[in-house]
Length: 329
Image (tube, rainbow, N blue to C red; front, side):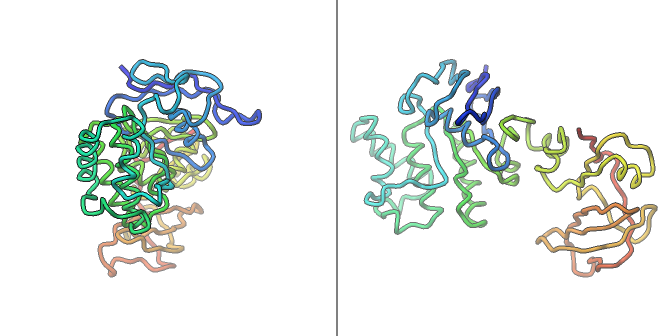
């Protein structure tokens, strides 16, 4: 049975529909990511679930209860935003305790629960500090602790990592996932970052223009995109029209074709001849742009050594894994 069920949800602003028929189900303890470009409706959907934005129609069931009529305070939901929204005049401990005061939790229980979450987010030594004395990553952990301490039935995370630098963001997403698994906490995470979605999620709901266009685990969304939008948003697929695909593969292709860049191998000899147009170093990967039979392809190759680099203008041979060819609508 679904723990969270969104049933025919509708929301419009000034007569313009943000979404008109959203349906999805989430299991208890599942980590689900709403992924999509800016303006696709993912944050609005999250705010509707939290009760911060009114809906125009439909139901939101949480553990079998329709929470649409309930105020945000009565939904048993914790939410963490991109902005930390910490009280500047309160210490870390006081910020975390704020929600417990609203719930009228007694002092002894409060101290125990605050100590538990401080340990969980690794901020034991920072309890007496104020927000201005913390880094961005530490502030976001305080915001997370403040939501966790109230023991919510459901945790909502609205792009909480987007303002942080890459190194802190990577560490914090690993920490969030570890805490979520440890607590078995049902979580909905909003991001437009495909890497975050692929590495953190049990399931991904890919959204575009107010619709969930595809849902599934990370491997399914990456290896089997349902349409051109999904292929273009997840990974760096080569998207070829039917004519280009037919010319490249030298056989009739009647639909658009998506080819993953890492599924194309480079060598100096082979049947499919191409020329290196450009290359970019992406750390452990070298991304080439190669023209073959009048079609430009993106090819990703592991950066094993500088001696393996193919310079611009070099003729190379390509081999395409047939299992990596994906027809898309």
